[in-house]
Image: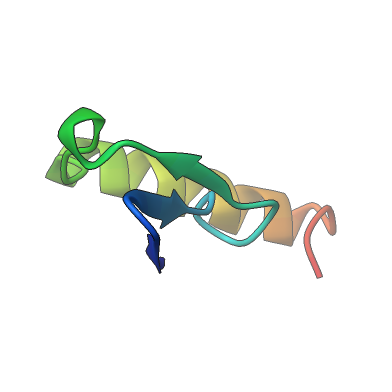
Amino acid sequence: MGHEGPYVQLRPYGGGKEWDAEPASVRTASPAERLRAATAYANARSRGEVP
């Protein structure tokens, strides 16, 4: 999402409350993790749980 001081700001896929993390603790999501998150979000949208 961005940087705030010495921290990286993260937010869940599909929105939500952000949080700060130390840059050394962060890695790029794997293709499988990205697909899993996108599928979960699409399923939640189809059930009307996400605007």
